Length: 157
Ligand code: MG
Image (cartoon, rainbow, N blue to C red; front, top):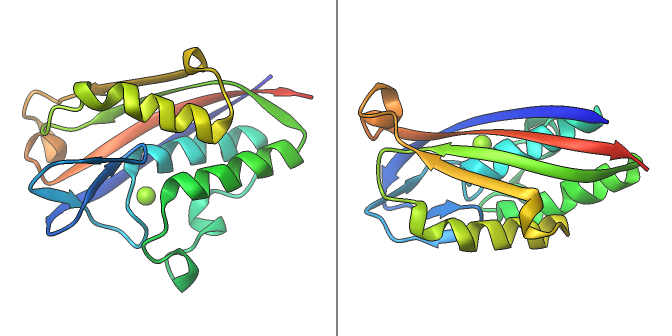
């Protein structure tokens, strides 16, 4: 068994689409980044890569590479899943939390889970996704950005 952790932060900006776990969520602002800035999917990718002992996403998909400009992070997640497979591991489960003051993410969690489970070829019960606020504290509480934490468990094939 191998465990990995991932963490990511993106700023919120007006005029950007808000994409969390591959779901477009209606909101006045979106996350700023070179790709679609899907903070949750980025944290999950780093957890998976870390568990497999592979290079992290900033190295695999650098923001200096135009290939990844406006890239759909869910597609990058599929690439990460393939790399984890190639490295000789199967994914046991992932668990993650998105930290955001607004908008309410709870109604979107089922669709987010389904997207991630499909991309990782996992049953829904192997994908844990939660959302929380920080009760108004810190950059997430001030609405300046969002963060996500993720863990992944792999098993050697
Ligand atoms: Mg990121």
